[in-house]
Image (cartoon, rainbow, N blue to C red):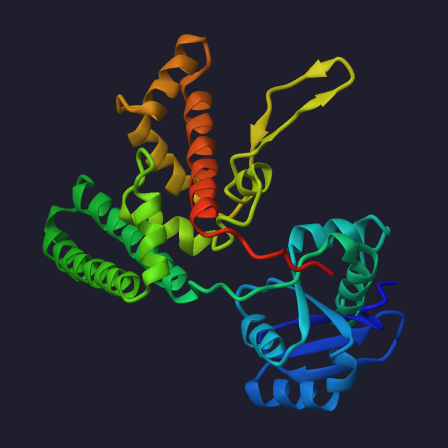
Length: 317
C-alpha cells in the first residue's frame, strides 16, 4: 500500500443518499446527498479522510456536490470510469448489487489500482462546459423542430414550429454571447482560444468546445489526448485474424466537434487538406482519412497549448 494513504474509501452515490465504506471493513456509513449531510459526514471523518484516497464514480451529476466539497476541503479523490469499475467487479465473478457492495467495490478498486489512478482536478472551465453543452442541446432541439416543420402533412402546425424555432434561435444566440463574454474576460482562456483557431478547420465554437471538454489540453501526450477525444485507433486482431482497427470511446461530444472541424479542413488547400488528399490518393477510404484528420487536429491542439503554456508537474498518487 502507498505510504501516503492509510486506507481507501469507496462511496456509492445515489440521487438521495450516499453509502461509504473503508477498504477491508464491513461497516458502512449512509448519509443524505445534501450539502448539510455531506458537510456533517466530512466533519465527522475528517481525520481518516485526510489520510485516505476516496474513490467514487460518475452518476449523472449526482456525485458533483460531494466531489467538489471533498476536494475543496483537501480530500484526495479519484472519480472512476463507470465502465472500468463494472469490468473490475465482474473480474471477481461478482454479480450481486447493492449500494454497500458497490461502495466496497470502489474501495477495492482504489486499493488495487491506485498506482495508475489520477486525482480528480476541478475543471477550470466548468461554466464554459455547461454553457457549451446547453447550447448543443438547443441546437439538437432546433434541428428536430426544423425537421418537423419540413415533414409532409405538418403545414397546418407551421406557426407552432416557427414560434419554437424563434425561441431556440434567441436562446442559442444568448448562450453564444455569454460564452464569448466569458472568454473575453479571461486572458488565458482568450489566448488559448486564439491559438486553437490557428488550426485548419477550427473556429471559435470548436475551440471553445475543445477547451470545455478537454481542459487537460497541453498536459497530455499524443496517445492520451487522442484517447480522450475518441480518435485513438484500437487494434482488432486475434490469431490469424486481422480485423479493421476502430476508434471508439472518449468524451462524448468530442467526436462530433472534431468531425465538423476535420470536414472543413479536408476541403481546404491548407496543410490538413493536403494530408487528407494524400491519404485518399493512397487508397484510404474517405472516412478513415477523415478520422486521421480529426486525430491530427486534436494532437496539434494539444501541442500548441503545451508550447504556449508548459504544464506543471503532474499530480500522481
